[in-house]
Image (cartoon, rainbow, N blue to C red; front, top):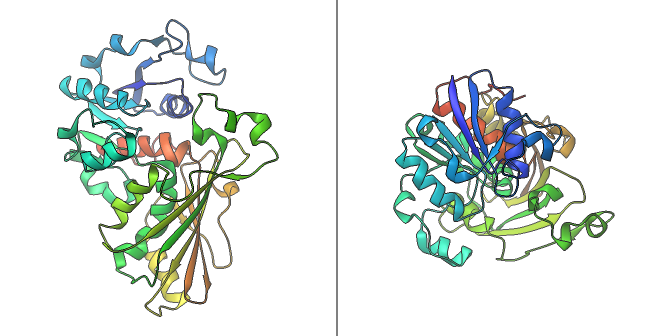
Length: 334
C-alpha cells in the first residue's frame, strides 16, 4: 500500500485529489495539510470530501510517506519539495515551481528568485502521455498547468511529427471559475462572473505562456504562440480552440490519421470522430482530454477539452503517480 500525503488539501485541486486517492485501492492517505483549517476535518470544509484530519504542514510525517502531492502556491511548493525529497519522498508538484527549466525565466514571470534552482534540471515535466517512460525513475514531477495540458495534448501530434507551421499558433482558451483557485477575488465573485464572459491576461501576460512555449520549442524553435485566456461562467472545465496554420499541404485524412495513431493506445485522450467538436460535456469530472479536428483552408482548427481540476490538475497527478509506482495507469481514475 502506497502512503501518500497531500499538502494544501483544502484548495480545489487538493480536495479533488483527496477524493481520487480515497477510492484508489493501492493508496492510503497518510496526511492532509492546511494553512487555514488546522485542527478541523476535511469534510467540515467540503462535505463531500474524505474524513481526514487537517494538520499543519510542519507536522507532516514525511519520513512515513512514499509520495507527496504539493497543492500549494508557487515558492511555498518548492520549499516543501526540498524537505520532502530530503526525507526520501517522491514528489508531485501541482504548482508552477518546477515547470520551467530556466531559473531566470521563472524569476522574470514570478517576480522572485527560484527557491530551489538546483532541482530544475531533475524535475520531469509530467505531461503523462509524453513522458511516460521517464516517470518510473522520477523523484520530482512537475504537474503541467491546466491551460497547457489542454493546448499541448492537442498540439503534440503535430509537433512530434514535425509538421511545418506557416504562421503563429493561436490558442483561444476558456476556463471555468475554479481555475482561479479558492481565494476570493472580485473578478471571480458570483455576481461578477455569472451571465458574463470575459477575456483576461491577453497578450504576453499569463504565466502559463512560457510553460507552453518551452514545450513547443523543443520541436519547433521558431514557432510563435498567441495565447488568449477567458473566464467562462461555469464551475469547472477548459475548452481550448487552437488555430494551427499548416504549411505542408497535408490532407484532412492525413492529419486525422496522425492524431489517431498518436493517441490510439492512450486511456485518457479521445480523438473525436470526424465532424465532432470537443465540449466540456465530453470531459467534466473525468481525467479525459477530448480533441476534435476541423480544417478551414490551410488552417487546422483543434478543439481540446479537459476538466481543469482533474486532467488539468489532480487527475493527471494521480496518473503520473500510477506510472511512477508501476501501478495500472487508470487506477483510481474514472
